[in-house]
Length: 191
Image (tube, rainbow, N blue to C red; front, side, top):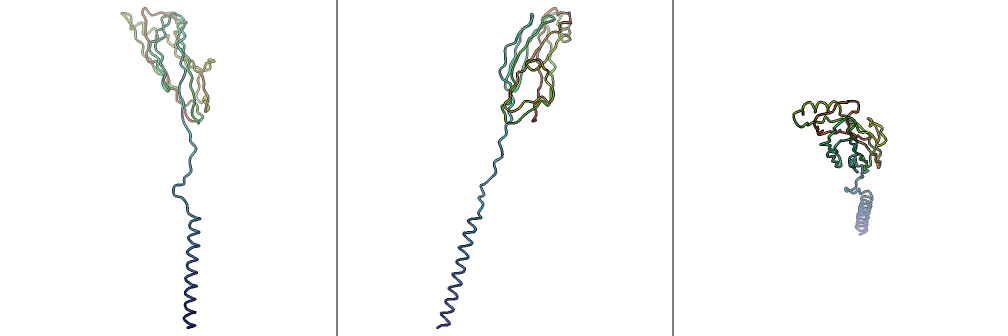
């Protein structure tokens, strides 16, 4: 009976030891458990460059203002009429960086407008105005826009758009000529 008791005690000790190892393993596996739903959240970076605060046109001479439309990313300028040398129309507006990334000017591309004359002299008048026409966008202080100009996150810069008839031209059209589709594509890239 002693043999059976010894055997029973040995088997009981073995069962107890295996049970202890199982409990220890379960405790360890709970400590080392990695939640499958864990993730690293990247920093949120936003790109938001847009136009705001368009002014009415400031007219010099006998020019007619036309239609200046500004939405968040586009400027449209149509129907400006420059009647004689020295005429101009100037608009101001802001370019705003409301994003969290710094930007810089990557490209400046001027659009070619069309010239629409009226009456029997329309072709000659269109040629006169096309030759004398100037379209310039600068900063408010008159400094020209340049490639690589910075626009930091949270910054706003006032721009000035002027469409004018060269004062030195000396030639006037017989009838009005409407300037349509004047503008530029201003591309900002990450700085």
